Image 1: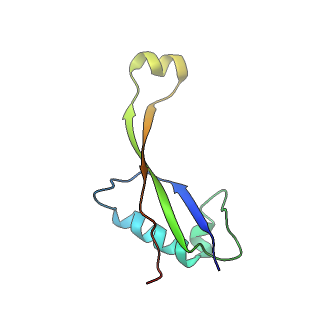
Image 2: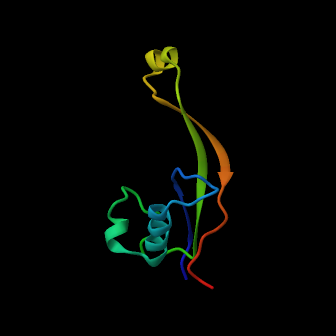
Length: 88
């Protein structure tokens, strides 16, 4: 039996980009080639039963914030996606 895993990725919750849907599918399948793309994988023995994504809205920082912090982006968490699974 697999486990649950979450990935912090950016996507429009109204429309899942094809590349993201395929990435989630390959993670759920346990694809070694896809797992190798990640520095840390919270599961190695078996692929997870489902993946839930954290959804963020990103926007550019203003020039003063960029100068003070070096950050280009601000982000706000919008919530979690519904669990995605290959199991029917």
